[in-house]
Image 1 (cartoon, rainbow, N blue to C red):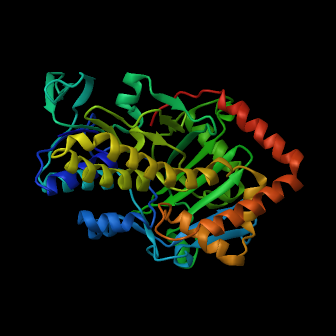
Image 2 (tube, rainbow, N blue to C red):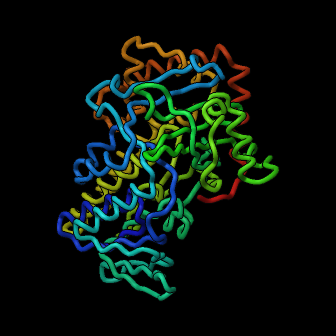
Image 3 (cartoon, rainbow, N blue to C red):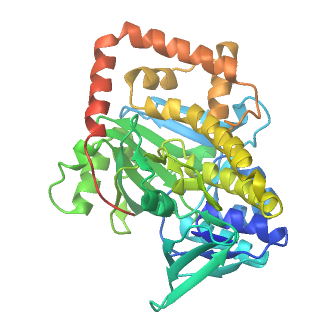
Length: 427
């Protein structure tokens, strides 16, 4: 077994397979630990951590995250906090905020402890068709040496590098969504008061939305996910543009008044994409190598690890029954797309004034608010029956849309215009 990529998806696949006694090699292009965004986890991550045997380690690395605060105006009283404890069903009551360099390294080490061979600074470069029930992958090692791997199955968990999707021309921009981001780490940012100190802050502003994520050593991760047309207007240095952007968001500006930027400024372009295929003979795609929606509801790590756990289980079966590959992968793809569709509906409308109004003034008629919190917790794969409540919420949303049709049309046209704008950057 060869796993390409040592992020949460790849390390999860490798750990699942190694624990079942399979021979697994995991290669990653970077030397870990390394910087990465996606620092806010969801409650539904916790059962996966428990099954992987790392829940206590995550607790040591993380800041307790009981919920999420949303806001728009400068008034600190004009905020809406969703507590995970109010979710419908039995999802865990909280999650964690983690520094991804430490978190990803811990997951890789866990895979190694279970028996996987983990190789850093080893980049996959090419892949051959199946010969004698093996895939051949060519790679370059830390010193540029040529390496060759022959594997019964290859798992592409290469993240935003999208190794197979790029090689095969499967990668497509998401026609419903296009965003880019600018971000960094800060010292001396204000925490939220009381029990909400560990909450993620999510704040709308005219160009997109801002995240604020507290980390264990007092660092605050803060960044803005924006329309690409806005990022094209940058003048001055990246640091200056980051400050200008964050200061144009009233809630973020208030919390960053005494802060200093401690990292360099990072950027990531063309966030949302998907692969037209999730598999090729004896090669399976998982996590961001298959698709990525948007960081707004912190779904990336959860979807990657949920997919990684399932792909590990599926591959374990396929090693003994390879004739089931098409069937099991069709079922897996439908499963993942079902959860992504639920999350995607909210993501694609997050910048609409109608959704913002409903989030800021929630009502729990028919347990609608509880169902929304379940989605925010990552409960999107049918564990809890929330379909009726979500349909009711969507009905209310569309009524608001019709009542505010001119503004809704302007928002839709802006989104369509931005889909054609490309911002090339990498984290």
